[in-house]
Picture 1 (cartoon, helix red, strand yellow):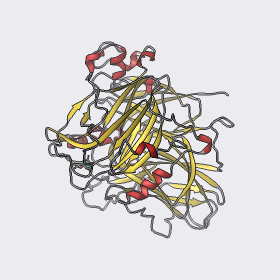
Picture 2 (cartoon, protein in one colour):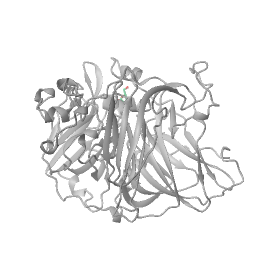
Picture 3 (cartoon, rainbow, N blue to C red):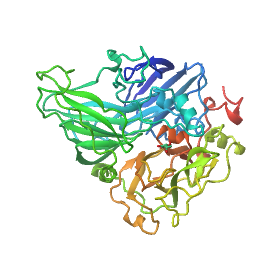
Picture 4 (tube, helix red, strand yellow):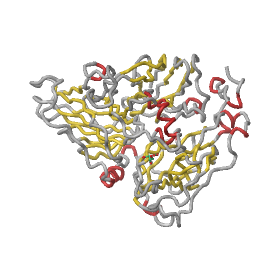
Amino acid sequence: ARTTTRRHEWEISYQLKSLDCVRKLSITINGQTPGPTILAVQGDTIVVRVNNSLVTENVAIHWHGIRQHGTPWADGTEGITQCPILPGDVFTYTFVVDRPGMYMYHGHYGMQRSAGLNGLIVVAAMPGGLDAEPFAYDGEHNVLLNDWWHNSTYEQAAGLASVPIRWVGEPHSLLINGRGRFNCSAAGVEEGSCDAGLPECATPVFAVVPGKTYRFRIASITSLSALNFEIEGHPMTVVEADGHYVKPFVVKNLNIYSGETYSVLMKADQDPNRNYWLASNVVSRKPATPTATAILSYYGGHTSPRRAPPTPPPSGPLWNDTMYRFNQSVATVAHLADVEPPPRTADRTILLLNTQNKIDGHIKWALNNVSFTLPHTPYLVAMKSGHLGAYDQRPPPETYAHQSYDIYTKPTNPNTTASDGLYRLRFGSVVDVVLQNANMLDDNKSETQPWHLHGHDFWVLGYGIGRFDPAVHPGTYNLKDPVLKNTVALHPYGWTALRFKADNPGVWAFHCHIESHFFMGMGIVFEEGIESVPELPKEIMGCGETKGAGH
Ligand SMILES: O=C1O[C@H]([C@@H](O)CO)C(O)=C1O
């Protein structure tokens, strides 16, 4: 079959945008946030020439869910796979989209993703190809969900690094396809900075033809929030998650964590003479942000497509109903047509205890009591060029005191250490990772963490609430039809078990997709097959110990 090379020329710049009607300095691509949607067909090569016009700020862009087989330098993770792109510089990302599905891209430097540097990648299946959809639909819509703050990400970062911490707090708005509606008459809105009449923040409208079936491709790029998405009066059949077809199941509303994508099918079979709400609500953390809405409108119906529906917008499930969300996680298994049974056993198991900790009074997150920091020389570059002093050579711990650690109480000694050491995996080996959640620094508090792996999809073997027992729980793993994903929820006080093959030569991040949590050290890095990575492009070098080696 014929594939295409799709070329994009992007200019990254700061602009004043009013995504929720409140003016804010935002990072844009060709003047837009969200950036342009990359449309492709399975097997296509994507070429994006990124021009950094941020003037005083570096940049790097990650292609979330794209595995980068053979192009590990194009993953876009600053400090891991490349040096940042300097102001005024141009960097070209070239990679193949080898699986159909819904993906995204976003900044992976500092907290730029939260400043607006994000967008969608939609990869269509090759018609009649091996990965053709095992379902039919008449039309499709894309939905990009986000959360949004009015203060700058620099202010947020400074707050997170302060003693005492100034936490980012709940978002000011939720966005649907980059649009939200802040209440301009609310307290604290600066005079003249909010304009409810701007077309930029007009409520999005999704139009459907009566009787037809639609595929909604839904992605969450939130910085913090777990969301619940609902189309009023229209049940949704979940058919895809993170680029893999799932055994169809019907939901009234969908829980979606940052970094996840889903496709759902929706039948336009309701009264066409009125409109319906699409609603996005915060779940898992106590909401302090109004519902984001869009409008579903039927073509030919006797109403204006912009008219507000006659009913109140769906408010979502109870925010703290953990089991409601847990059950959706468990229900997400592979479609018969997309079952790729995992290896029966793993060569190596890494148990990762997720804790909130402190270093010199600064609040951090740690895995097995190590809080992650990025090295100044990207691992990929350092390892290929023999700069072994560029990062901590001691491997981080494989496990924690899982028999004695009490996940239900706050850490007795919250002090932790920071490291930029990484996990080196034997090429081709099968690796299990079990994430264990625990109580945070405050009593009776444990939060959902969405974990994202670069360079691979992993099988989701199991979930539990409570303490993971390595002698018992592996016996309960789903080895029959586990779904392959790149992002997965770790529920409060719960555990999540994953398996993947270390078969993609390169260096890959595995981290919490909450922007501020990664900033606070909540991640690790894997290396595999570094010896078979070919000569690196010079353009990824030029920082840290490779100063002078770049362009
Ligand atoms: O990392 C976090 O910090 C805050 C809080 O624990 C401290 O203010 C919070 O809710 C997080 O998820």
